[in-house]
Amino acid sequence: MDNYQLYIGGEWVDGDAGIYEIVNPATEAVVGEAPQASVAQSIAATEAAAGAFDSWSRTTPDERAALLERVAQLVDERSAELVPLVQSETGATYRVAKTMQVPQVAARFRRYAAGALESRIIPLEPAIMPTTALAPGGIISAVGHRAPVGVVSCITSYNFPIVNMAGKIGPALAMGNTVVVKPAPQDPLAVLELVRLFEEAGFPPGVVNAVCGTDIPASEALVSSPHVDMISFTGSTGVGRRIGEVAGGDMKRLLLELGGKGACIVFDDADLKAAIGGIASVWGFHSGQICTAPTRVICQRGVYDHLVAGLTQAAGHMKVGDPLERDTVVGPVITGVHRERIEGYIQAGRDEGATVAVGGDRPDLERGFYVNPTLLVDCTNQMTPVREEIFGPVVAVVPFDDEDEAIAIANDSDFGLYSYVFTKDTGRAWNVAKRLRSGNVGINSLQRNHEAPFGGFKQSGVGRDGGSFGLWAYSELQSIVWPG
Image (cartoon, rainbow, N blue to C red; front, top):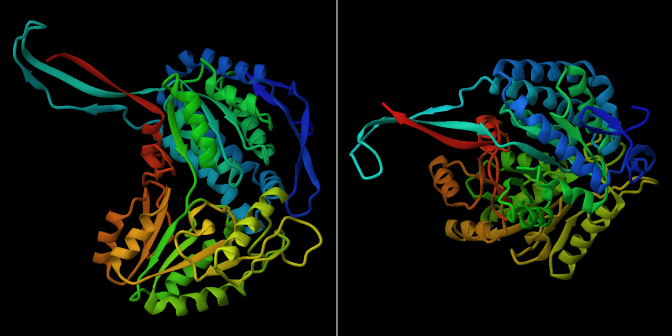
């Protein structure tokens, strides 16, 4: 778009609160100007979604599947336009933008086009009920029915703007809900382009709406609006808590995917090449701006020095620089303010007794919000950069002696999103995984299974999505009972 606008009730409109600049994190140049929604416009978007809900929720699964499949096709067709926009907004490396930021969007819409056709009925055994003062006895049949929630506010983080949004919009629409889309303020432009594809695909007015901006009251209106039934949010724990406070008064449904401080337990019998390679692969991935990263490595003392040496060596192969250069591994972080936040955590580690084994500074580049991959060693689990989510290319290593100590250290955290266990003894790994207070546990691998339920324990969130669990998340469970 030459002029980015909000999308409310099938109409593109300017933001009542003006515009603001979107900055390329690598060059600090202006990518484009985003519209600022007012509180009234946020409420209007939720009202439009509420008005469209009844008719949309009664469309057939085949109709919803066909429209979602059409969006997937349009994403594929516009990939050459979307990739450079997403790359310039996020600062992602060219490889990440081309292979993960955009193709996964089409894949998610195709998954939920198929998901729209999944049965909503859960069969139950009939019950033999005695006659009571309430009703005659007999054979009573029942089913569980997954009904749409209603209007869903979809609010996402900046690291994977259109992938995260596709993971919310897809299952929500497949289940018959209507949505209001609110991308992160740092990089909303590609999400607005994505919403245009819904219009082109033929979605009825009001089914998909989009607002954006930096104004907190306008964002809170998407939670407090009486027209909203559910909030699906990916982002920081602090914001998630505030959403919970605002939504709780009206008993709105919540799906919150919040912060992480991934524990990666490395036993002394582990395949260290695999462990070091796995940790290193996500250490600098998207400049560490990923919630599933194993940023808290808990290593048995027998292999501690070996692992630290391996990670130190790996850092030397992580080229930091222009994300458009094909051999760049680590690009910039999203803003200058966020870079300063990361640097503050590194300094806190120094002040509390950690040793910076590698990194801890900025690369010698004229422009861009860069931080060198940083490895903190000689750490304890009580240090600030070990306990708090940094969301940058920083890994801390904590030693342990035995299995129980490793589990105790891993569980001594406010977070519980994604943890990992590396050991050649897969039986031990299984038993350790079950004791970890973490929503997801990887054994000897950092690979994901997108059909598995995804979400966190403790301060890492509420609810689960992924695969068919994503469809369940955007539904209410209804019981329908009748005499057999």
